[in-house]
Length: 284
Image 1: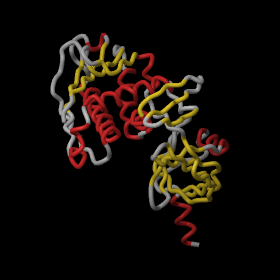
Image 2 (image 1 turned 90 degrees about the horizontal axis):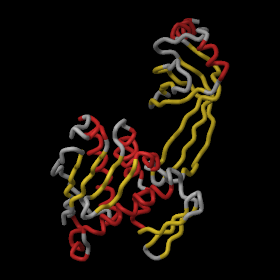
Image 3 (image 1 turned 60 degrees about the horizontal axis):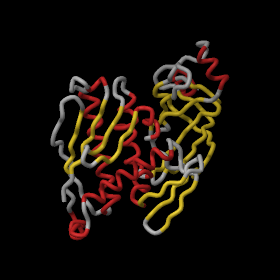
Image 4 (image 1 turned 180 degrees about the vertical axis):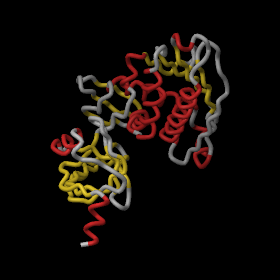
């Protein structure tokens, strides 16, 4: 089974028929990842999808993607049509617009349909596959790239999926911010530990996270210790290769849909040990 979907950007930046090559590549990859996720939500995990760029149109950027679906799911495709995939994608875009960048206030299922209530109390009814596509972390990350980030480029005013004969979705630049991950964040664990960390890269700008190693892995963490940051700002705390901090660190695990994430914060810096001090301690 094959179907064709046109991804079209509109605006002054596209009038010459050109788009930055890196932006174009990023958009095409993200759109492909989104459509592969849509295929699996529509036809099941056993479905396989292959995407090919089949054409461009002057005056705007158009990508026609051909999806050939096979694998185990191909045995049931005699009862399925490409229109079902397009309906799922159309419904997903309606859900993102409906939620306006926020998690749903309430969700209820009736047969194969989902009632989605937004934070304004408004309700939309869509296919179950459309809603699960919106909640899919890979699909949400992809739509953030080829819709939200793409429409933030100056001179790119709108995006269209489909063509005049079969329109699927239209997104204006002022709606772009709605197309982000909207699955509710569910806390899983919250612990504060005393740890020894090696400083990989200190960051001397407000709001930026430092890079650390705990001996087994490296990670970024914000520092909330105001006294320590003040000493850093005044040059009292100086850093070199191999410096170590003894800290109180908060580790929070949360789940968004099927994706588990970890956030780390340094609550208090208890001690700063530079390499010279470490050597002196060994000689004592």
